[in-house]
Image (cartoon, rainbow, N blue to C red; front, side):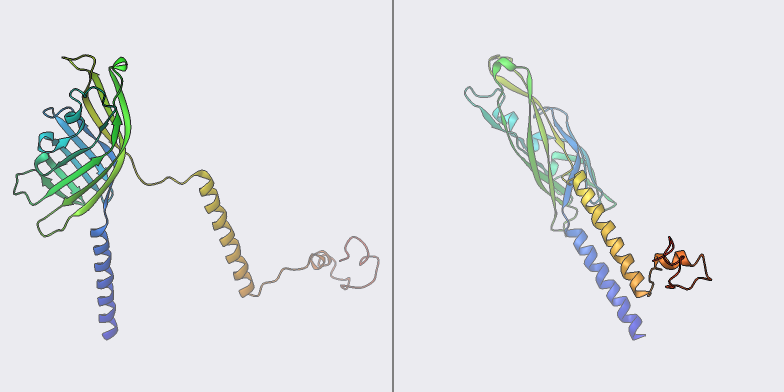
Amino acid sequence: MTRITSFVVCIGLVSLAAASRASAEPIRITGGTFVVLGLTGPSSIAIVGTRGFSLVSGVTTLEGRVDPFTDCIPCAPGVSTISAGAFQGGTSFFGPVTLDGVTYHVGDGVDDPEIISFEIFGTAPVPSRDSLPTSVTVPFTLAGNFVPSLSHAGIPIEGRGLATLFFKPDASIPVNPNIDRISYDFIDPTPVPEPSTLTMVAGGLLALVRAARKRREKSNGSTSVPECTKRYSRFPMIPLGEESEWAQGPYSC
């Protein structure tokens, strides 16, 4: 009975430790898009990530900030680089969030205990007026946090991808670029093994299998039969090792 109790307690502790590690594991965004059509336009986000994470929501960008729509409407003369960053959180989002098989809903008001927020970091060059209309694609990174309840400290969110900024001539000052819209496209941060790496792994596994087979043969006491014994076994009447025309012929060792 004591052994059974100890086993159950051990299993419980292992399960608790696994659950704790899972709850502390950050969310990594693996795909999706955040589209900004302006500070007052119908912006949206649809992203997925590890731990079964997903967020599909409209975005009220005025609740946060989108730097290009602050720095480049129109871009100031002589400015060559602007921030491609943004910050959104709280009531910026209104929609379902799924994590670890549980669905939450964010954006129900300032008292909503379920909160998601993130900040995007990156910079972009300002195109020349001669190239308008045009687009610029630059890398970005994301850091954020998701709080599923008031009793939860929050789960970190990580992501990266490519931001495409679309520029057009300013309506009032055509010589100045004006930001039109932005698309933040997320990519999977998990590295894909190169073919050479896969070949090395396969070769290593094959070597391990061969070594294990040799050890098993030695432990079973198996030995290989000499080839000369195999040949003489066809002629059982001829003693092995006898000096004869058979022993010195094609059947000799």
